[in-house]
Amino acid sequence: MKQVNILGIPFTNMDHITLVQQLQKHIENKEKSFVVTANPEIVMRAHDDSYYMDCLQRASYITADGIGIVKASQLLKAPLPERVTGYDIMMEFLEKANENNYRIYLLGARGETLHRAIKNINIDYPNIEVVGHRNGYFTWNDCSVAEDIKEKKPDIVFVALGVPKQERWIAENFSDFDRGVFICVGGSIDVVAG
Ligand code: UDP
Image 1 (cartoon, rainbow, N blue to C red):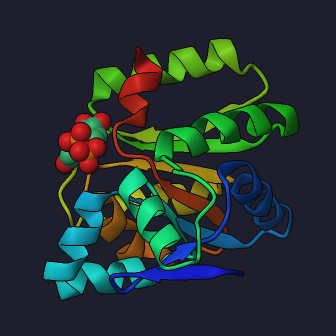
Image 2: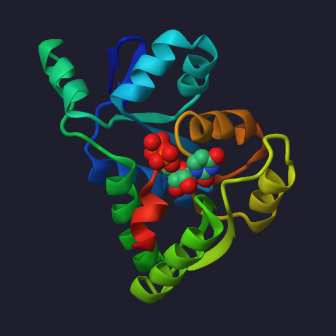
């Protein structure tokens, strides 16, 4: 897999369609994977916070969520194909999930927002099974969150806990899981909720 190193962060050289195809292969093979969409805030935070940088280094794929990062890659003569946001990946993946009857789990956002998002997903993507959800306001050491996901074995977990919580949460809990694609999607559950 081609990567481009910018300020110590290994960005994945893939457009969002190819990335989702790659993630589908992980689902078919019952493998696990961890996706970060790194915006400039994330890049700067990682620069100043070595623990957070370490969390990012554990990701399977890191996309460039910022045109400035794409421009920097061009200057380095290793151009990344496009800006890839968590929302882009989530929308493309919901289409594929609907075509393939994937089982999804939503982690994050406020309870009411989360329920509206699930309602909209059930209407717009009738073949998707939302196997579980949990709002994003739990205490950090609450093991029941990871246990619930482990038990329900979703194909995809959309993690919307905001920066830096979402990247930290996946990095700290990833070893507990055998399978599933874990994607940091920031405020995307709020957008899906409308
Ligand atoms: N969020 C959450 N738990 C938290 C903090 C944030 O579930 O402890 C959710 C928030 O409700 C929203 C999403 O994370 O749905 C993104 O939050 P925010 O816009 O603050 O983060 P950013 O996208 O700027 O990282």
